[in-house]
Length: 516
Image (cartoon, rainbow, N blue to C red; front, side, top):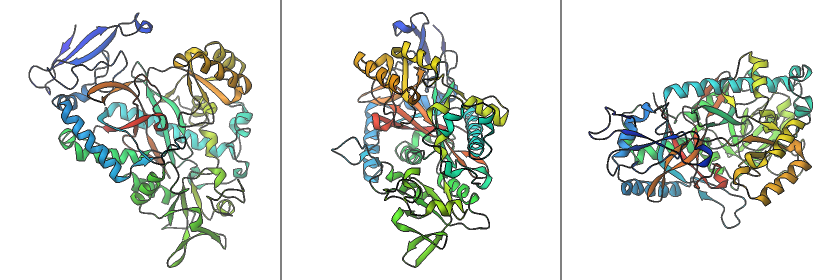
């Protein structure tokens, strides 16, 4: 047994490493579990179960950067923590910080569950994430410019051409269209997981309309109000400037010759699952929130209806999918977009963020080729590695997936929100057989990955603190250059043992703290 004493902990309190085996799968490798020695401390009975813990680290990588925060949390009583948690829940409800689950016929909005124990990331880990995210977004933007122009990466056989031009998110209408600074993805969310060795890996890219950043900012506001004693003096990097950073980046990519561009946020409306976020971001950016009915095309320009007449629009931060943007160009039945918008866009008289056709870059099948994409355009090795991925569209990948389906996570390439995902080791025989039928019928629509031992974070569950699996979605804003919001959305799987963190599947969120 090994023990160390932290100078930041009260007398008599330290951290003890206890060797134990928690599952038959891991019996060959005894695991280290951490418990505080302070009698009655918040973490007295906390057991990470052999997973890498965001609060304590591991035996090989103890989380020294968390020592002061652990000490402060340990002095809190569970009853006091629950009382403050209930207060944050009431505040979330009163502020209307909600999301929509379309499959729930009994409710339109619900409050997103919020856990009050923060997830803390060290400055060293954050530098790695920051540079890795910037590298990845740079490669994505170069890839998108290429596939809509010269298509070098396809001609040289780095990526199968049919994977791109045959993709439902590929927009031939964008071929030859030039964008300022070649910025196709102005707002990107990259989903990361930390594996059992404490290594951050990319799970997927979100290059269309990534959501969730409003919770990052509001979670911080909640924590600073409810836990000033926990956050005071530890040197948290701020997240409240996201709106202004986004507005500045969108102004940079405005049409040529416009020095003070008019920016709007285009929303599908109040029944959209992320409508709260649309309202929040418009307020944070200081720009009008509009719907398709608020805009018209007049003399080759986009105009916004106002009480004082028409006002020119130069940049549209759109939270509407490609298919619904312009009924004259895409889905003729769409009532959400603006008829004639795409023609104005092609003429260069308005800029859309993100650009039309970016969905081809965050397809789950293309994800497997991201290391090659980074190497092709940047001549660099990926800073953030992918999770091992098998493409069912390829014979080897299909054969491996079908032979090991009970060991793998099988995902449809075109879905989001956790829908359609089958976690093999936790699926029933009937679920596996149904999944097998779908994969065999349409293999190009599926990928598979090994089950990653996602890291855990202490989470307040009823009257106890228990480990729950988490992921992380950093947000990258790109205009002329890229900037990464110091933190990101930590999503937590609140169901015991669950690996699915999506809010639509019962997940919640935590505040993500990046230390100076």
